[in-house]
Image (cartoon, rainbow, N blue to C red; front, side, top):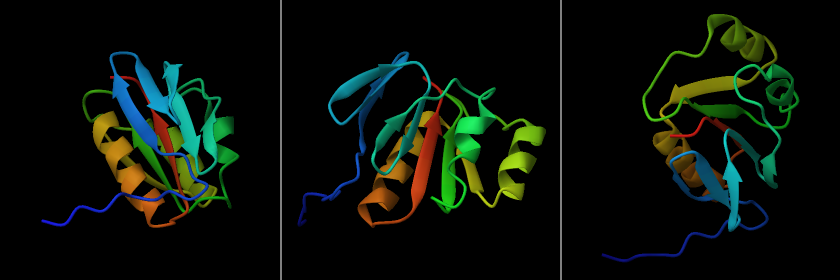
Length: 117
């Protein structure tokens, strides 16, 4: 099997995660985290729709990690994001981090909003 190192150019991938934290660009972030191509942004969790809406027009798809288990995104939040033109994919946080990294490595316009595991 041939293994190639993934190149992220100017984008910052998620390096890892654990109980209550995420690591991006070698820096630990406690609690919920919002990532766009250039790196982590402030996010206060599901009640902070404004930070997510600020991504409209910048990204095509927002991956939302709901923690250790898959859960539904609140219907009003999903509707607000979709009305703003954001594609929303909800999954557990580990899967959201992996999917974000893969699409980011392909140069896609993606963002990640994750709740800790």
